[in-house]
Image (cartoon, rainbow, N blue to C red; front, side):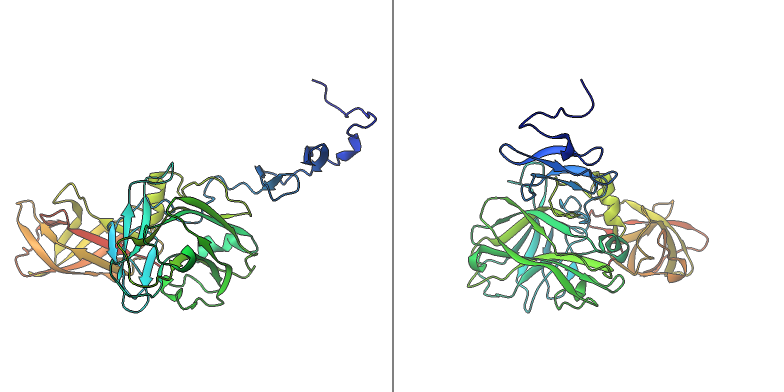
Length: 390
């Protein structure tokens, strides 16, 4: 193979078409050669039908390119079905919150069948059958400031798979999509319905038309402000009339990435384990559905009805946990005495983003100088949830 200048041939490609090393010879149409200038160090060459040459350079984002955590809905620590409320709340797939304005009459649930190739789960948001509530049903994800700052000054692309239920009642089969930014620090997802983020601005505000078959959509933003310190995105539909049996939409494969072209979907954590760890930065649920008495931590009593448990968190959480939720917990000693816990609260003196102190209360029976284990009671429904959400 000869390396050097392209010979100057009458009617052929002239060597002067190239201006720098690594320039690429391409074409803008049939029999129309063109030069594509070399990209920046580390850039990836991607196909782009909107570009004049059909090619363009994009900053490589192969590792962690997806800013949407749990975009394939792999992690459901809280459960696989959740009745919507009027308050924006977490209760189903990790990192996703949802609500329905006014009197809620909908449900968020896990889908495991008839999915796009390469996906195991999807999220379904559905208005209850026969409901006449026509208030919007929404789902959102908000990024913490630490993960939003890299988007400053950038164009981003939100891509996702979506389909409509058989009785989807949104006008023109529309699904509304938003990507928004703010200038506050780690503000709550509950601010989103009212546009309450400090410095709220929308960089994507549009609708897509759903059918009852899966489609992949791709929406590119306007440039994000260089002062933006928080980003969020969401999907919603406004139903009409009386709900049929399947007035719903489904989504999966949600990806928010830097650049103007959607690339192949990847999990933000790379692997299932990495995705779980990314979710557990915000919420950890101690529960073993296959073991009716899964151990959670060690404990010691300080009165006949009160004790303190120490729990080691599986990942470093975003902040020291701000709240707990629980059901069917007990403490047990080495003699297998099982004592039901009636209440748990955070022991703030012992709470960090790596370890957790928990004050617990029982009716009676704690013995001085005896060690205990904090664990699920004799039911797979027992759990301890640790919350550090936005």
